[in-house]
Image (cartoon, rainbow, N blue to C red; front, side, top):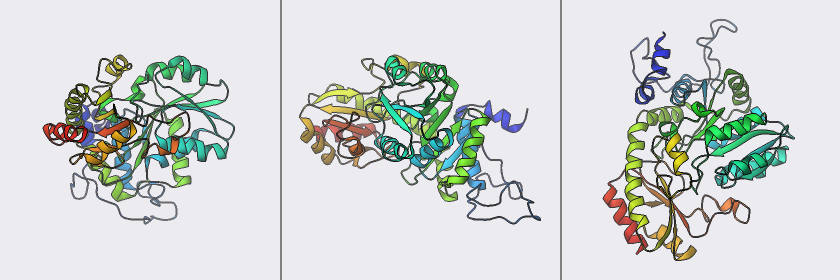
Amino acid sequence: MTEQQHRNKSGFETRAIHAGYEPDAATGAVIPPIYATSTYKQDGVGGLRGGYEYSRSANPTRTALEGNIAALEEGERGFAFASGLAAEDTLVRALCKPGDHVVIPDDAYGGTFRLFDKVEKVWGLDHSPAPVSDLEKVAAAVRPGETRLVWVETPTNPLLNIGDIEALAAIAHDAGALLVVDNTFASPYLQQPLTLGADVVVHSTTKYCGGHSDVVGGAIVVKDLDLAEKVTFHQNAMGAVAGPFDAWLTLRGLKTLALRMDRHCDNAERVVDFLTSHPKVGEVIYPGLETHPGHEVAQRQMKRYGGMVSFRVTGGEQHALQVCERTEVFTLGESLGGVESLIEHPGRMTHASVAGTDLEVPADLVRISVGIETADDLVADLERALD
């Protein structure tokens, strides 16, 4: 058994720290260097050292990140990009052609919806929204012979709906399609879709993978080498790759992913307990609640339920906006998954692009990304904002 094979059988935390990079042979450096280079000296024409010729095609720092995230998702190959949307667009171009069809979540992330509706549609790719939690509706949205991808988020953004990955994979495969799972909200620590039948995982590594709100990035992890070959070609041909410093920061974040996710989950559970008993909160949406319609599926396919919480206030949109503006520990801002807690109004912020469509979110909805601060401070902050 090789060292890499041994590590692939190791525990998650061990893989997070060691997979994708061996200590430098010359110096023994335990952390990958930042290879800030655009090109590489060749030993004669075509004589590449380690396969490196130009950093759009490959860069050693990016290679380390790609190997690491592939190991965490238990996939065949990983690919790092300049953003989550760059990863999504590259994947779509690699696996689809004009005239094909894709099923997307009916509460997809606003940027993903915009990509399919405003960019890929012009290119000739059609799409149909369906609720990821309703297998019959997903199956009905599939067009055998035309549907190339069934694209799901689970949990979804921002309504935290849960899709049964194993069942969705069966639906996709029966129709000759591939199942793509956006695993950003769960992170590789809480959920590994490829082990449940998915063909491809995508991430905005800006979020939990990087984890410190200091880098933008995206990733794709594929299940087999045939898909890897197609993505490899398009990653190089389209060029929206992660730079070496961005790759280094993301890899640094992944090393502490397990520790951070456990704290995110601990704090989210405390916040949920508070919100469910508050008279000015009409509904709390969190997969860890037994009242959540996807709780049993989430319990089966997730290690824990994550750090994302959404809730609806009783005072309508104006009250929701006021809550977002009044918090002090929770920072008003877009994005999620960082060590700091964030609060936002999806209807006016992250999901403004779906206003007036079937994907429009409730106006009284507030979404919070629960960070790793002291839980008592987070609860007190929300209490002040609600009251």
